[in-house]
Amino acid sequence: MAGMEGLPGWGPRLEALQGALLASYQRANPDMQTKFAYAPDGPKEANLAICSNQVAHRFGCLGVTLEQPFKDCATRPMPGQGWSPARAKRLGAAVLEATDHVRPLLRAEGDFWLLGGMDPRDKYVRPLEGTGESR
Image 1 (cartoon, one colour):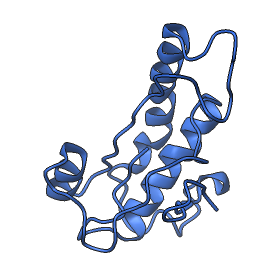
Image 2: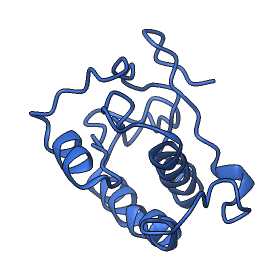
Image 3: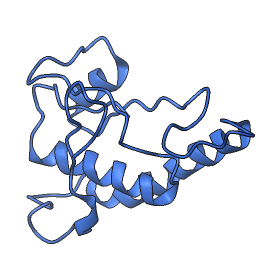
Image 4: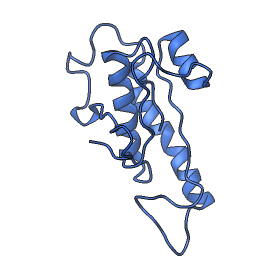
């Protein structure tokens, strides 16, 4: 999942939303992984020509890009089957559960990430630049 780290407005609120979305997505479907990820953009270096970045920037909202595997899931390979339409469908459907999880936070007032309004498992984990692995 490519996130919003390089946006001019990146801060604790967007960080908390992105962390909650990704963590809840992983809980909803183990094919959603963070071991292999895009290196985050540097501060204020987001490409605003990418739709998710532009929408997140313009509206101050959660915006990410999800790319599904096309060969197999690197962290949960199924050699006899590989990536299949059924797995793609389940991964796509799981985004609804993740979205429902973050929905109450999307327009929450105040510093919701500090006020106990978040699941402790939802902490943002910054991908390590250039390694393809997360901390």
